[in-house]
Image 1 (cartoon, rainbow, N blue to C red):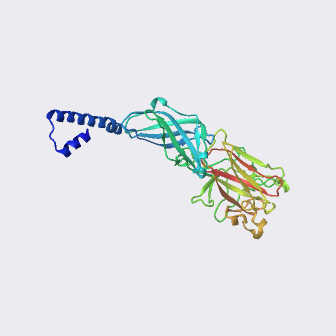
Image 2: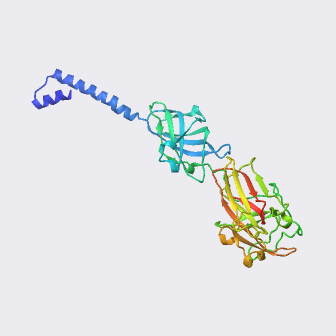
Image 3: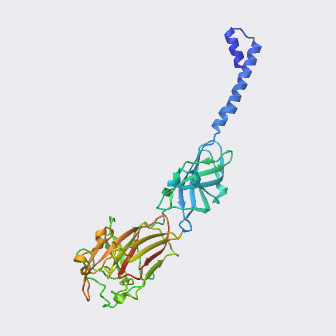
Length: 382
């Protein structure tokens, strides 16, 4: 048609009214076809955009089984979401497709509400049994694959960081101190074999005295505010091959299986102890094992950088030798109230937890063959 018109124009020939009418009709039909086949599909296009708003561990097993997704329909047609898949990969393996993992057995929590009108944003929840691992040890990336009506190919999002979307609504927002005896730890009043009040102190130049049944607020290395430690009135003393500590326990554990918790840090008041200077230079006097609900652990083996004798005069130079490591804060407790009225000190220390996981067990283990007698006064999480 266009070629015919070009020829007429070039030859400058007059056309009859009948031919002009036919040409006009043909142009009209061509224009309608252009709108129908090109313009209409353009205006009826479907543009999808989706991202994870929240990822949760609903059963507290330290694996994530629910994701909250925001989906935007930027097109002009209604769309119906039929399936949602989530892929994950550790950051270090993002560049290798062989390690991209597609999580199966994930379903829409409310499939009846999967219709999205044009220019609308909808929040959807997807749950699955093929759970996702998150950890502080390495970042995890995700992408979404969403199938919906009217499209031959699924929508696939870009890779984004999933750790940033983890739900921390039940992460401890403040310090929580533990009552060691209520949690099942064995304790004594004072050190075994001594007067029952030998545990109490007159108070050092900065902190103390230690009084049972109250919180004492103390500095911990790298913390900008003081940490509260609840004092029960009993001291937890671990095993030593020396003197009257041979019958003390080698293992003390808090079981939080019925009420696991998330926390960023774990704090200890204690560690110095009787004969704390009597274990080998490179030896371990106490091991702290934080076990999460997925059976993974954070473990710290503590030697002289954490533990020395709590009687100053038993340490070289009558000073806190552990403080030199930079891992503990020395807490000067002054003198014991009763015999032998030694000038004593203790330590505070902080440990970073995997806050993407729930703590199930807090276990302190003494090797059982060392000469040290480390002790605990209090522990706190936060």
